[in-house]
Length: 441
Ligand SMILES: Cc1cc2nc3c(=O)[nH]c(=O)nc-3n(C[C@H](O)[C@H](O)[C@H](O)COP(=O)(O)OP(=O)(O)OC[C@H]3O[C@@H](n4cnc5c(N)ncnc54)[C@H](O)[C@@H]3O)c2cc1C
Image (cartoon, rainbow, N blue to C red; front, side):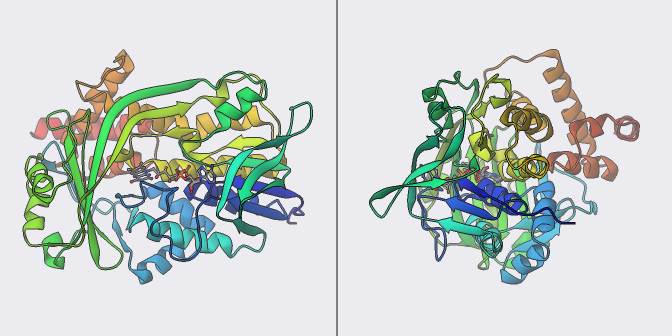
């Protein structure tokens, strides 16, 4: 029998992590209120709370699976609305170290659209849940607590020029990287939130184009991945509205220019000419726009020993990754599965138990992959432990073998799509395939 829904949860932030959180909270709470400073409903292409909105956002295979599980039929709805779907290994041209990976049916779906498009489809489904309401144009100011500050009882917001308190049994902070929870909880007398930062100095530049279909040669995306040899990359991808998005990136200050000629010149220097060639027959639709991402940032809430009851944190507010690995939205989705487990067991879960599971089940593996991959660039600062170096050696073998061996290409796609853990690349089958591929060279 379904559990009775009771009480109210408030979700701070109505972006992807907030929407996934609201979706799972609506299974146990009678009311779920999403608070955001932006106008979320209606045409919201230019919302200021999401400065990354115009840059390429790939939804990894595991993220796509979770989105479809939460909102059955949404993938087909998005396809009908103008998104593109294909197989991540067969309908995408992957170019790593200047070489194309072998094409193979992986059974994993690539869904390509602009970020505002994806968010709108997910949000429309969340808003349609009877328990969910959105408090938009509301600036979140601070938490409300009991007098002894042991329990969070809601949130104070400013709406239409007036302050109001929205009371809640549970508050979930999904306000992204700029989350104020570390400041708030310290102000309430809890220890500092331990933070980890790894500098990457990434720069993105993005431009939309009209690309003739034949230039994609049957692919929905062409991904020229940055590597130690050429630490610059770009992706050219079909998205909604009959457009293609081209995002180029470089690390440690080597950023793609935002003037049209400089942008094209940068694309000419990648490890493969494919995207530059496609753009020779394409029509730009806007001006190139830049974005800077200084460092991977993780807030280690799971290392705290005391935390106020009634408050949890989700998504980028816990961990924000080098975006070129496209993990953020999928990690937010994985985190929502942890949230679902905890609120199903108790509507007001033990925050430290939740943070512990969030770390092990959603964040740890992706964090190690992202930091490990960043450290494969020789100029990136950080300790290269034996495990990191072994990881680099294995990935180099996998990437090389994946240009010829379809079983290795498939296994690699499953790992970078967060469907399988990295340990899958050390299975007896893949170890044998790697050895075979090396003998055949
Ligand atoms: C350039 C770039 C490219 C990226 N590419 C990818 C990709 O390819 N694939 C991928 O999976 N991820 C990508 N990401 C990461 C992805 O954008 C995030 O992981 C994802 O949006 C989940 O973040 P979030 O919901 O936790 O927070 P955010 O998306 O940052 O949203 C926070 C929300 O909180 C609201 N808010 C914040 N403060 C307040 C306040 N005081 N009052 C009211 N409202 C507030 C904001 O308006 C916003 O709606 C990229 C990120 C960047 C920067």
